Amino acid sequence: MKIETLIDQINKKKSFLCVGLDTDLEKIPNHLLKEEDPIFSFNKAIIDATQEFCVAYKPNIAFYEAYGLNGWKSLEKTINYLNLNYPEQFTIADAKRGDIGNTSTRYAKAFFEELAFDSITIVPYMGRDSVEPFLEFTDKHTILLALTSNQGAFDFQTKKVNEKELYKEVLSVSKSYKNSENLMYVVGATKAEYLRDIREIIPDSFLLVPGVGAQGGNLQEVCNYGLNSNVGLLVNSSRGIIYASTEEDFAHKAALKAKEMQIQMAEELKKLY
Ligand SMILES: O=c1ccn([C@@H]2O[C@H](COP(=O)(O)O)[C@@H](O)[C@H]2O)c(=O)[nH]1
Image 1 (spheres, rainbow, N blue to C red):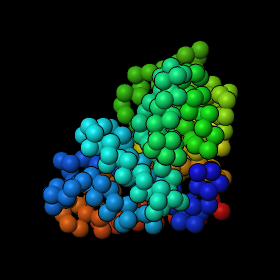
Image 2 (cartoon, protein in one colour):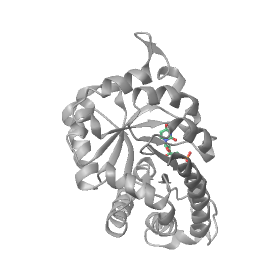
Image 3 (cartoon, protein in one colour):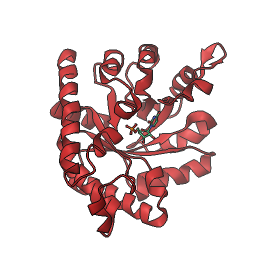
Image 4 (cartoon, protein in one colour):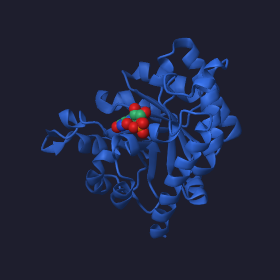
């Protein structure tokens, strides 16, 4: 998907919400467990109920890999369902990959060609030649982890290298990568106050911001520091939306949570224009 299409969708839906599909058989409603593919049934119901309030979906690949071959099949059905029924939705494979060049190329083929995602999350620490194979897919987006939402982000990402915090090096150096215009970055909602500095280095880039809701990040603060003139944000919520209820009404309750966030986002967008 082109970035212009994503921006159009955001303006049309007045939403920059990304719904995280972190589907866990231990958390989904019991009545779904007797279905042939409970993970896909759950995802399909969540997608159908929430799609009008969001512009993106982010399955976290760990939740599918954990179930072996069956999990991969559920993931494949989910991305195919999205691409066929809601092609206007931006799709993110939250896979956190990145390896030596020829291996990265295989990861890129797996998620961009075989599974036809619009984007993938990448760990940047193996450097340029581990990232550029993803950027060769110029109709896709590569989302580098910059400053993550967890406590461990302070172990390395905020430490100084050449007098500059490592996450800032990631932002600056990656701008020199081939096709870097197709880069986006992950910044945790729990680190909202860092967004001011981040926007000085990458004023125009889109940011994927996880960590609102269950991890305690605040949407208002993220908007205060993170919005740019093209919106520039995709704010993700996974558990806070998809597990709003464990009863038969789970999809309806998820839609209400997504709508609640969309309404807040619409208010923020009003201030932009
Ligand atoms: O810094 C990061 C990077 C990725 N994530 C992922 O986003 C979702 C968040 O889920 P919630 O249930 O809304 O907390 C999950 O898939 C994480 O692996 C992140 O949280 N922080």
